[in-house]
Amino acid sequence: MNLQKLSRITIALFLFLLPPVSSAIDTSTPAAVVDELHTALLATMKKARELGYTGRYKALSPVINKLFDFPSIAKTVLGRYWSKLNSHQQALFIDTFTKLSAATYASRFDGFSGEQFKHVSNEPLRRGRMLVRTELIKSNGEAVRLDYVLHQTAGRWLIINVIADGVSDLALKRADYTAILKDQGFDALIATLNKKIAQYETPGKSG
Image (spheres, rainbow, N blue to C red):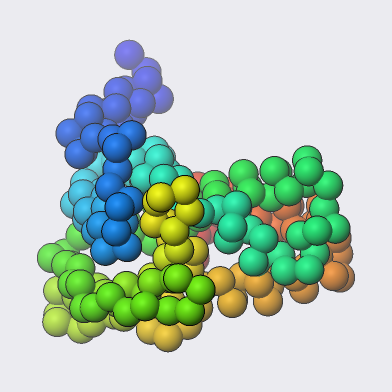
């Protein structure tokens, strides 16, 4: 048996041991959505080294796809440029952006040393949105604020923004992506996102 095949089998075994991704993931309340994400992250973190990047990506991707409203996020991220794209470009951006999001989580949550997530509060926002405040408690007791903005669509609550220590991920991406669209065009934006995905896939080049 060659090493590549053995690696695939090993990843498959560890994925089997992770909590299954149910099609009935609880999206009935904002807090439940965030809890689902944190549960998946912790389970993957605890087996991070055994799974490797590929295994972590495969474990987290379906969960992230179910808990984030990527079509809505994509429209917000691209702002006024969204309506200038044709349907093929819009679909391509959503698909690439979704893959990048899963790749980012798989790369960053790459180990476990006793971290825990703590629910802090739920706060109503304008336009029927909700803010779920949480903290990631590191092994040394240091707390990282992780706040989630959610909205309800078709009876489900879904994440549309993550705010880490007061910094909006949506705002950062909007600034970066619209600048690329303005200066270089759509193809350059997709190439940039794919480059980032490739960097996460290559050990020692992610960040």
